[in-house]
Figure 1 (tube, rainbow, N blue to C red):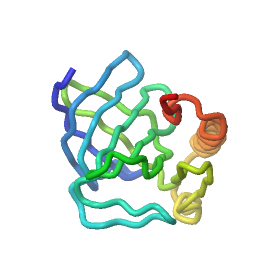
Figure 2: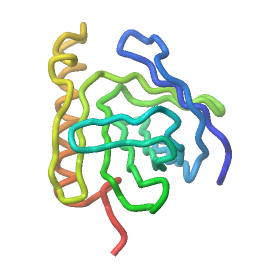
Figure 3: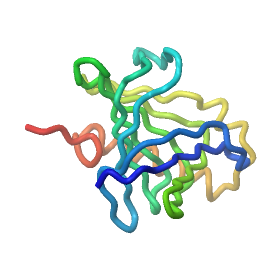
Figure 4: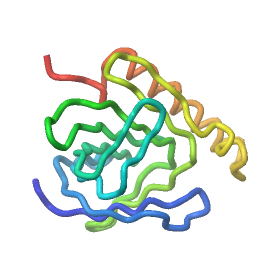
Length: 157
């Protein structure tokens, strides 16, 4: 299932801030898993360093308020961690996948540590109380899944 896909990352106001290409690894009606290679300069979030050529296995959902990126070293394949965006549910139209990022992020390290990032940026967004509640519920779901090693945080035995 190596069909190409273009990912459109939008900000909370719906403005495109980043576009990149990946390829589908699997698809269901509500979950899309794809592979993409990081094509930006070195980026650091907490203790997670992302380099050009790192491999991302990205899971997007049509029915959840987040997406999860498993990040692997581009040279060794070693797991670096997971970067999770709290976002409105993703939309897939043909070969275009759109996600609206809502600023709040969760970083999960291979040793189980977790860090929430960009809380102040999230608080500053003009969101409804319902959207804020969905984001907070999504964050709680993500931390529970990560702590249990379930869902997109499941590692082969």
